[in-house]
Length: 392
Image (cartoon, rainbow, N blue to C red):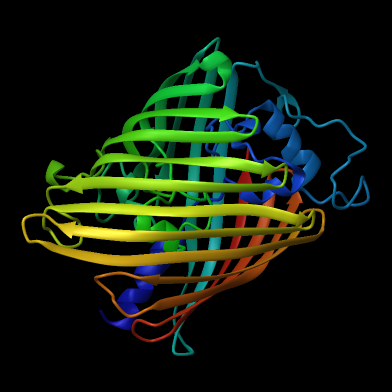
């Protein structure tokens, strides 16, 4: 593949979302369901999560402790935009993300552009034990996540639907049984969805959601979710849709340390890449730990197996991710990561390094700047991405 075309694919894949914050384990939040309506984390916040986003995420400007997040003012979690009262059963959501990206191949800039990355509206309902959630958005002609499209224009903008499901709470509220289009439960739900561990396992939450039935359980010292994968209806024709199962279990070793295992097996009559009947499997482990409150370490390692059915061939690979997040001042994060990946289709070891600054300026607004260097397959590439994110 020519370098310019490879860079275009990287540009499109970087245009996505940022909703789940595994680094909240530094504050003792190992359970994603404490703050999110999705028990595995991401997208909609519950009332408690809205409060913590104000008390712990945003810069305090002298209003409280810089690291622990003790604030002098009461949070406005029950009000939309801080002043519109909300009923407890209705949790709206809205996301706008814009960015500017530079791409270089072997040190020479080959692409620069403004990115319309996300423009979504949604809502989560909780009426007794009944639960429902839906999210719809606009995708530009160049930035639309192809696997999340509802409409399929090749020249104009598209309607995007990443998530919509119906569910019921079980086990006294500790469990959630739901059906619909759902994020695939596997590994770290890190927002760097173009990281090798997310792209190699097809489990990012920018566009890799799929239809199915999932059961999640969140207990004080562990959490787990399993899902029957019934196929992504945004993929046409049906022969390309993967069906199988995925799941994870994570155990809290302490309030600030957690260790988990993941598994995924999915079969398709025609792989999107090889066009052959394929069984794809991923098995791995992941960990989150905060040895010191300003510091969070995240790690994931996965084994990858791809069997071409009927042909007797099997590709074996692996993907790894190690990330460091340092919060010297409340709301200001310095981060870095190293990654590696080797697959049967690209047997040469690919490596990557990430670094940047993330500032939660005020509640519901953040700025982020990333530099991503990758090498090992073809020419080395460098991506610099600046993002402005606003959310309800």
